[in-house]
Each structure stands twice: as structure tokens, then as C-alpha cells.
Image (cartoon, rainbow, N blue to C red; front, top):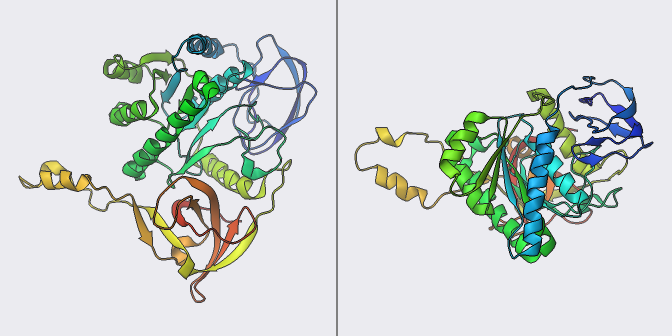
Length: 408
């Protein structure tokens, strides 16, 4: 059965056993779903009572869950082998086209692993929601109402909070600044692999990596990800041509598996994606109806903030049309890639912008520790009115400006 978009619905499992993306639903408990596209699965049948308007309601006669469960058990065999030897747990990279069910499969594999007392590290390399790249150990059940759950910055939560490591990319697609994207992926890979080395439980549980929509032309990027995260299993969702092309290129490096695309996958239009982005930003500052947060507003001078944004090259020329002898100069320039550029604070640049505070000082670029939305800029008074999730002074750190805007 399909669940709603942004209209909202309350659902309760009356009889039987049902789950959403691998996470079992508690019987006789009312779940509230808003702003998601999902489906309820039951192996032996279940009776569900709901109120509200659903975007679609039907009982499917076909499901790809058998293939996903078989993949889970294949990974479980690798985990068992890792637990009895010095081998690492499976490091799985999931690839596929847009809206092919990559995130769904990631959640299913993570939830099933957690139900068997594993703690896999889930890595999200898809920046389409608020432009962050994350690595999170799944040590508790997922929050079916709000996706993955909430972090420690949220305060007391109904479920065990997650501890994500976050890199702020700031843009919605990798094509907007592929160099900066690769840089963040590489840094996140170092952190993720270090976490596995330091935590035996997570190391034996392995890693599950979700990706943005990639094609065979992105094979160099796929190769970088395989190297950065030491991937040994590559899963292609519902794209036979991509599977064959990648098998030709990477069959000597990794085990490649193809699984079918779920018939329940639906395309997300731009309006829905924008609503998801705004919902994610709002929940970061204000929480959810069950976990309400109170952000704080501070006023600061332009002079005490340092703001950078991802650097975008303006010269998109093709080396093949350059005069002979100039290609070498271009290659020489690539050795010192400029990733960020400093900007001057102004209303045009920062009004309603979402920025990230870095863990380093104003001249370094390090892991993100919190995000802050700039809600008001006054050029005449050279002041910023900044919304932050915790009380106190504005951190004396550098900020990265992203492409997102949030208006309350």
C-alpha cells in the first residue's frame, strides 16, 4: 500500500506483521506520515487501518522484496565470514538511475542488518536533500515517520539518536561542481574507513553506500568511490545496460550484482523535491510535532564572519580546440584545484541562505559541526540576523554558503 505525499495520514497495524523499508511497524500504534513516498510490506498479510488521504492505495501482486531479501542474506554470509576471520564486513555501493529505489534498498539492507544486531555504516553521497554527504552507523531501528531518525543535536528523541559524520557540499547536483564534490567524497571516505578500523562491531557489519544518479560516463567517479571507501560489492538497481558496462570495467575489482527496480518506485517531481528540502531544513531548526525545538537568533557584524562558497569555473572551454602546446598548461593548472572562494557578506548573497559552520578556523575547510540559516541581512547597518539551533555566541568559524534558500 502506498503512503501519502504531503497531505498527511495516520496508519495503524491492527493485525499481522508489516514493515516499511525493513523496519517493522508496532501493532496498535498510530503512525503519522507526512511528506514521504513509501509503501507498507507484509510477508504473511496484515490488516491496516488509516485516516487521511493517500496518494495511491492498492495491493500489489508483484514485489521485488524476494530479490532484496536474498541480497541481504548474501551480505549476511559475508558478515558471518568476517566475524570468524580477520576479513572486513561487506562494503556495498548501490548504483542506479534517478528514482530507481536506491535509497529504499539502502534502508532495507540497513534495517535488516540492524535487526540481526549489526551496526552497518550507512553512507549517503546523494546531495539532493540539503546538500550534505553523511556517514552514519545504524545502531537502532530507523524512524519510519521521519526517514532515518534524528541526531544528537535534536535533543531528547523517541528513538536512539544517530551520530552522523557530515560533509557540506552546498549544491544540489554533482555536475554543478564535480571537483568540490569529489573532494568531499574523498574526505568522507577517509573518515568512514577510519571509523570502521576503530569500531570492530561496525567493521564486521560493513558499509552501505547510497549514491546520486550515475551513468556509465561517470565510471571515473565510481572508480574513485570504490577506492575511497574500499568497496567490494557493487549493486546495480534496475539498469541492465549500466550493470553490463560496469561489469566489463570493474569485474576484476568488485563483486557486481543486479537487482530489479521495485514496481512501487515513483518519480519525484521538482515540486515534491523542493518541499522535502524545505521540510528537512525546517525540522533541523524547529524539530517535529513529537520533538519540538526552539532555535535562537543572534545579530552579528559583517566584520566578524568569513564566508566561502564552492568555486565554479567560468571558462568551460574544450582542450581539443586549444592551440597546440596549451594542453600541458591546462593540466598543470589542474594540479592546484581551487575548491572555495571567499565572498563579501551582503544581502544579495546571504538573504535567507543556508550556510554551514566548519569545525576549523576561518582559513581551513574541515568537517561540518552545525548548520545555520541566515534569515536577514542589513547592508546599511552591515549586520546579519542569524538563526542557529543552539544558544550562545556565533561560533568563530568559517562558513560555507550553499545554493539553498529557506524562507519562514
